Image (cartoon, rainbow, N blue to C red; front, side):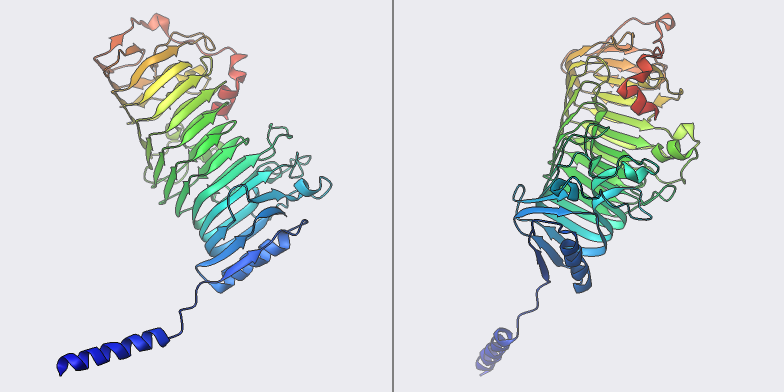
Length: 463
C-alpha cells in the first residue's frame, strides 16, 4: 500500500512539473545591418538589454555594421555576432569618409567604438574591422581623446570575457594605423586610474594596430589572456600599474615590431603624473607557453618597475617560464629585459635569433638613457639560449646570450643542458654551470649617443 501511494504521489508531481509553464529565458535583442548608420539601433538594443536584466543578449546578425561610439553602463549579458568574418563592425567613416569622426564622450580618456562601464559583458563571434583612414578628428589634438581611439574600452568595476573576436586595423594616420588598440581595460581619467574586475580574452586575433591589449590600473582583479594571435606594431600585451591582481598570459602567438610582445610596467602612471601612486600590494604575473617574435626594434618580454624612481613601495612579481622567443631585431632588444625589477623568475625558456641578448638584466635602462636603479634577486634557471646571436651593434656595447648589466645585483644564473654564456657586469651575482666572459669595470657599457637615444625603443622606454 505504501509503495502504491508513493508511485501515485510521484506521478502527480511529474504531471505538475510538465504542466507548469516553462521558465522565461533571458531576453535577446536582435540587430540587423541597415546599410547605413547603425548607431541608434545598436545603442537601443543595449539599452533594452540593460533594462531587461542580467543574462540578456544583444545579437548582431551576419553583415556589415557601421557605428559611432556605443557606451553601455552596467550591462550584465552577452554581445554576440554570427561569427568572425560574418559579423563585421566598422566606424562611420568606413561607410562614408565625409561623415563626422568618432564622438568624444565627456569624462572618458579614450575614443572608442564600444565602451563598457561597469557590469559583466561577454563578447564573442564577431569582427571589428576599422577601414577608414581617419576614424576620428585627428586634426585637433588638443585632448588625448582625439588621437587615442580604441576598438573596445572596459572601465569601472567591470568584468569582461572576449572569445573568438577579430580586431583588425588599417593604415592612414600619423601613427601608421587608424586605431590605437584592440582592447583597453583601465580607469576613466588620471589620477583616478584604478579599475577592478575579472577579465578573460581567449582565442581572439589582433592585427594592424599599434597595441593589442592594454590594462591600466587593474587593482584586486584577475586577467587571463590565452590562445590569442597578435600581429601588431608596438606591443601585444601591456599591463600597467596592475596592483594586487593575478594576471596569466599563456599559449599566445605574438609578433611585435617596435616595442615588445609583452610589457609589464609598474609606475607607468607615476611617470605621467610625476607623483607616486597609492601604496598597493604587488601584482603576480604568470607568463608561460607563449610563442613570440620580436622584429625591427622589438623583443619578447620587458619587465619594468619604476617604483624606486618615485619612492613607491610595491613591486611586481613575475614567473616567466616555458616560452619560445625568437629575436630578429638587429641587436636593439633582448628576449627578456629587466629594468629596475626585483625577484623575477625566468625558467626553462627557449630564446633564439639575433638581438641585444637572450636575457638582459640591469643593462637596458642605462643604454636608453634612463636613471639608474637596481635590478636584484633575479633567478635565471635552465633556459636554452644556445641559438642566440647576441650583438650590441646598435648600442656599441659588449654583450652575451645572458647579460647582467651594471645595475644587476644578487642575481642567480644556473645553466641548462645547452651551453650558456654570461657577461656579468653586476655585483654579488652567482653563476652556476655557465661560461662566464671576462669583464672588468673598464669595459662598462657606454651610454647611447644622442642619435641612438632617438630609436623607437629608446623613446618608448623613456616616455
